[in-house]
Length: 62
View 1 (tube, rainbow, N blue to C red):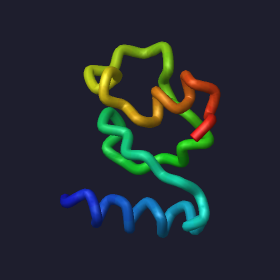
View 2: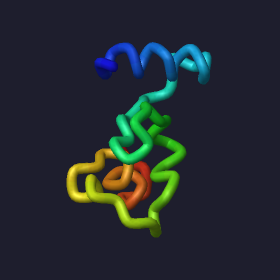
View 3: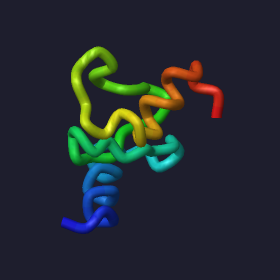
C-alpha cells in the first residue's frame, strides 16, 4: 500500500488533521509527532532514520 493511502487511512482513524504526523516504519503507520516513539526502549531497525524518535529524544521541539 503506498504511503499516501496509509496516511489517509490513519487520518480517518485519528480524525485530527491538525497534528503533525511522522511515519513509523516499524509499525507501518503515521503517528502524531507530539506523542513520540511508541516503543523507545525496544529494538527498531529504523531507529537511526526515525523522525519520530529523533524529535521525542530532543524534547519535542520542532
